Amino acid sequence: MEIPFQWSFPRRLHALAVLFLGLCLSVAVHAEIFSERTEDLAQQVKLATGQGKQLAVLFEQDGCDACARLRRNVFSDKAAAKRFASTFRTVSVDLGREDGRVVTPDGSPQPLREWAARLRVPGTPALLFFDRDGHILYRHVGPLTDGEALRLLARYVVSGEFENQPFASFLASHRSAAAAKHSLQGDICRTRS
Image 1 (spheres, rainbow, N blue to C red):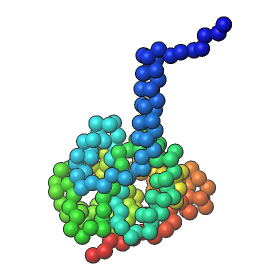
Image 2 (image 1 turned 90 degrees about the vertical axis):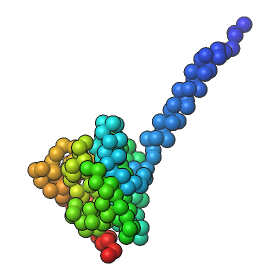
Image 3 (image 1 turned 30 degrees about the vertical axis):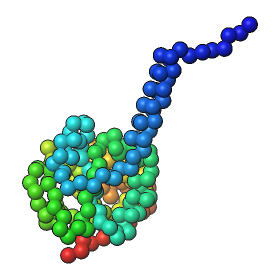
Image 4 (image 1 turned 45 degrees about the horizontal axis):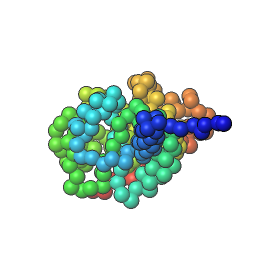
């Protein structure tokens, strides 16, 4: 006579714990990048450093079609988002708020639009990358069209290639010229005065 397999209580508890952990990790991995809005970038640099990452900040504003397309067509690419999030802590700031203030990565409180102007952010979308000391590494203004362009932008920043060539050239060297040109096409949304 065959005895059916029975799990002991500790084995059942262990299996449930593993299942719960897997669910938690899958939710964390699939969280949309740049979903957290913040005004305190100094705190975000500290959090990024604690996670062994650099900080990527998305400047966006309501009513910006290019920002909506970026979220819909690029950030929704789960593989690209997962890879990007493994390297960068991602947050966004709302450049459309006329009264917006921000604590900059170096800890100084400033009007958001004035700070963005000093960083040469003429409109949205714009992605700014900061090192672990809060210094700007690279600024990308304008749209990206797909997850592959986002992955290449991450590689471009992490490798330091921004010191050697423009992103369009880097992109062209990793894609066909036509695909690279298409990856950067589109307008930016000017900040309202």
